[in-house]
Image (tube, rainbow, N blue to C red):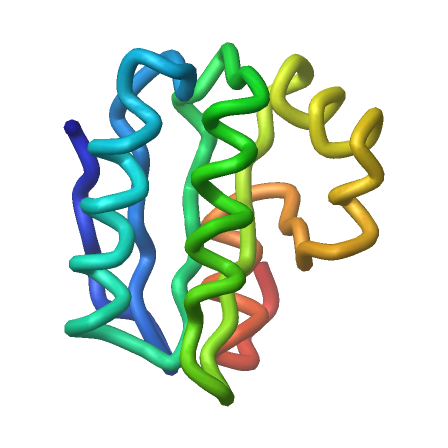
Amino acid sequence: MNITIEEIEGGVRARVGETRLDAAISIRFKDRLREIMSRHGPCLLLDLSMVTFMDSSGLGAILAIRRALPPGHRIELAGLTPNVDRVFRLTRMDLVFTIHGSATDAVAQAEGTPS
């Protein structure tokens, strides 16, 4: 599971280095995100800019992480490619998650600097 992490203001940016979030990797993905959240916080910025395909298993893994967050912690998404964005819109999960155009925009916003 290729995820790189970078400390940001108020939490961590996790950049998913996979092109697919599907049934084949969703369990490892979820386990890796749980590990990251247990060591960092309170905000996880999930950078999905390299993910070009996500099925219901990938979406389910992200939702499972969201449900397991301790009080005061949050997960935000950034860099959704058109196909991934479509999954969030069709399932109306775009109303549940904070979604940023890019990770750079999200980090700039968190730091209070213009992007």
